Image 1 (cartoon, rainbow, N blue to C red):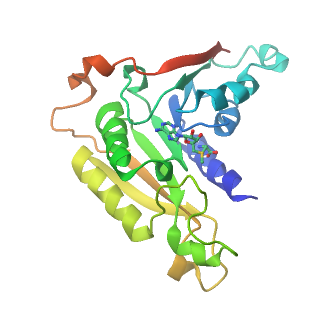
Image 2: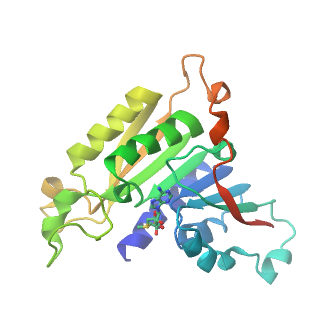
Length: 234
Ligand code: SAM
């Protein structure tokens, strides 16, 4: 399957295994991951956020219930909410989630904004799990005809060491632990030297947070910084 499907499949597989109740997809774009997640009906609240409200509005209608959804009354309740907003801004409605996914998002941020993103996601939203995917630049030598970045809007593409250095600092700063994996394998014999095409970090919040958890937030001016675009109840 194409790489974007493999990335989404990785998330779906995680959801099947871990059964999070509240899930938010940051940088949800065309809502394609949300459209797959809505079939995993252990989820009670499914939220998407993207800075590009026009893009979300163009694709969000595929999230509406199908007539068959109403023929399955045994289904649990599901609520979907979509917001226009930036992952560098705090919004109180995004706190207390079980899973936050950031699929091919961070490389679209400046390094300064990556710092803001880290603080918002790991320091303020404090979800149980965060899944972050981003290109592995060491794999680029295997992509034919590629000069420069994989996409013109990328602000950076990190090696495995660069991604891991950022991730480990996040863990120290905000009390998480991380495991690294990826999707998109190199041809036999080259996997070790170049790694996966897409690198993935799976962050888990540590239980002890020095007595400081989600209840000590104080950023009152920023509490409702996102704009609600769409909401539906199943
Ligand atoms: N996650 C989707 C996927 O896997 O197909 C879309 C990835 S797309 C490459 C990156 C998305 O991040 C775009 O939809 C873009 O609008 C969004 N984005 C960029 N900067 C953002 C920011 N500061 N806050 C929220 N979303 C942002």
